[in-house]
Image 1 (cartoon, helix red, strand yellow):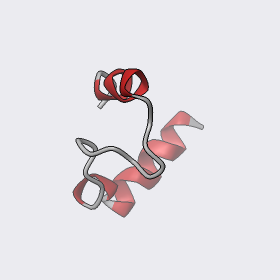
Image 2 (cartoon, rainbow, N blue to C red; image 1 turned 90 degrees about the horizontal axis):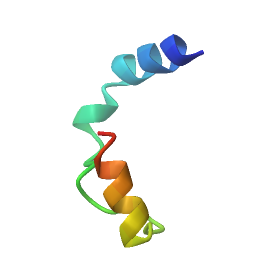
Image 3 (cartoon, rainbow, N blue to C red; image 1 turned 45 degrees about the horizontal axis):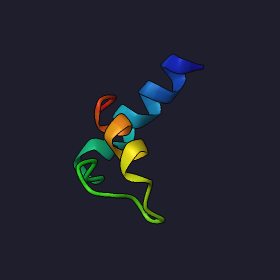
Length: 40
């Protein structure tokens, strides 16, 4: 399943469309957003 999601992500080129440095809508708590930043 993990590989399938990675393949879909790569095929859709989401990295070039989504700005992961910005808060999502609805916004995360500051602690959650800081945690997410360690993953991307």
